[in-house]
Image 1 (tube, one colour):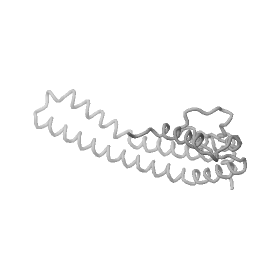
Image 2 (tube, rainbow, N blue to C red):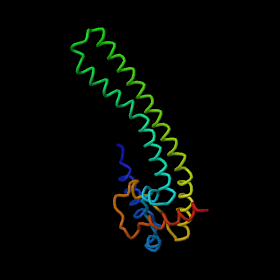
Image 3 (cartoon, one colour):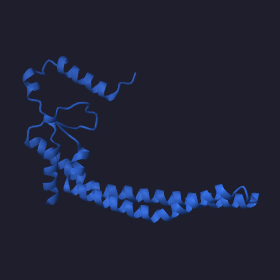
Image 4 (cartoon, rainbow, N blue to C red):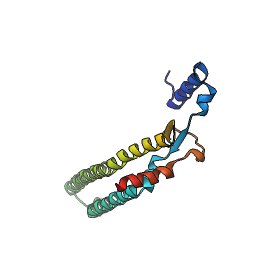
Amino acid sequence: MMLRPMVFIGLLFLAISFGGQNVSVASAAELKIGVMNVQKVLLDSVSGKSAKNLFEAKAKELKGKFQNDENALTAMQQEIEKKSSAWSAEKKEAQVREYQKKGREYQVKTEDARFELKQLQDKELEPILKTLQTVVEAYGKKNGYTVILDSKAGVLYANSAVDISADLTRALDQAMKK
């Protein structure tokens, strides 16, 4: 039987809490947990906003490049739908083949563009994420956190008092200035 990850973590926590003789109430009181929203930190940080703007500008540029192709395909499809009943079987077949060929070419171009956007995103986010990892570790050590969790990665509830996203956004902005 496969346990869901959250059930497994909950059972593991209970086993450690109640089954471990050496876990005391005092050590449980020293437990300090912080929660952050990595996506929010990235989107709110200066470097994250810059990367997002660059990404969106490139996406808009690429979309503009493909607009003519998309319009041509739509026009071709409408022409086939309207005129196909008046065409000979050979003419209809040739038009459909041409439409399919242009559709495949368009699909290849858009897949290439998606790949290019993914590479750009990875290139822009990689240094930010590396710096964020360093910032989170330093912040956690400096402020005595036992663990800092990403609120979007399996945390079902967290009191807003333990959300340190804003502090980490400021720390990331400072670290990225260096």
